[in-house]
Image (tube, rainbow, N blue to C red; front, side, top):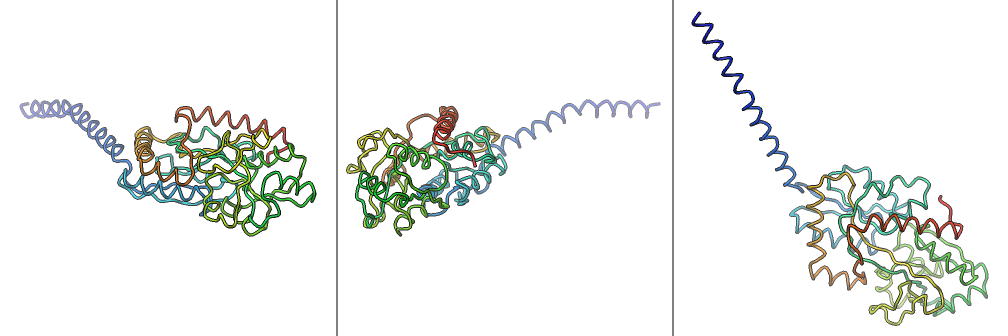
Length: 333
């Protein structure tokens, strides 16, 4: 009898401990989860640059990787995934885990490709911006050995030599729209030859394979080869301090005002803790005077806008681009 009472008492004591143990276990799990989140990043981060090496995106991407690595205390590597007008690299970022360890470096092709391609493999809602750090206008460049020295001379040469002008590009994005708008404004036709990346597109002008191209104002090869290349015009609203002798399209009588931006994105499903850590770390990187100086030397203008304003801006860019492209007869491929 006494033995039975002792057993029942022991069971009651054990059962009473269950809520306590469960509470302790839950607390341990919560602490472990919080610690794991606080530890981000606990391994290397990669920045996917959807352009081949040699372009301004590659140069700035490696600068950013080096400085971000110092801030977060982890290795940050750059992975060049050029091809498909940035679609190859963008799709790679889209299919990567949404854990904050993959960052996509993109320009306005992120938006324009959604229209330009019937199956881009992603939607704007798949990504959210974690840093926006620069803008750049587009420029018309030609070889120093070309038969024309100004945009007006190029147009005149094209009229005198119908069917002979050609332009290098990287796809059917903003460059194609600018090119087609100029075609309509001047009445001169030219062929577009697409290359895998911006560096190859500029090199084609240097070697004389094409007559002109429309890279951004910050394309490294332009400024590294002043003896081989000349800038004929720029799509900014006013002349740049870094290119004071280059006339704007507006000055030359063409209502063309286009810019691209430079930004970093992560998957939209990225956990808030990881997103916030990256956001604050990148803000520290881009607010550093040394980084601002380096970007200025590379002729990357400061970004005009806020991070919160990026999603509606992208949608507006897509809508405007689709409208303009349809007007110019550019259909999704």
